[in-house]
Amino acid sequence: MKKLITTFLFPIAASAADLETKSFLVSIKSNCGEGDVSCNQLIYKGTSKKSGNTITLKGSSWHTLCSDGVTPCRFLGYKFKNGNITYYVHQDGLLEVVHDRGKILVSEQGKWQE
Image (cartoon, rainbow, N blue to C red; front, side, top):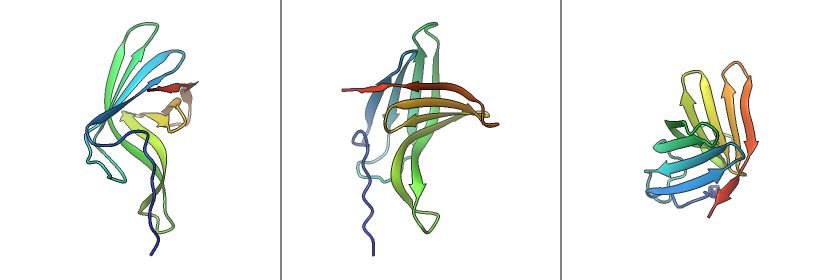
């Protein structure tokens, strides 16, 4: 039996991670238990540096799937839906906002804050 190893940017138990890009400040808060491989209790709070407008969304962790097509494997980051727009926050700090028709609305590399 294979052992599943996943790395998170922060311990999942009621914690937060902050990302800063050129145009946005993003905070991701988790309400999942420590050690959970995947989490669907994440809150995204994104603030525009230019306008000050803020959006708050619910979402989940984002993984590749193992060979069985069901089990989460490699951690990729976080995913949040707002109608037909998806907000992806990649593990490496890339923020992408994508319309479901494939149009990229935002693509900015950021830095995780400590």
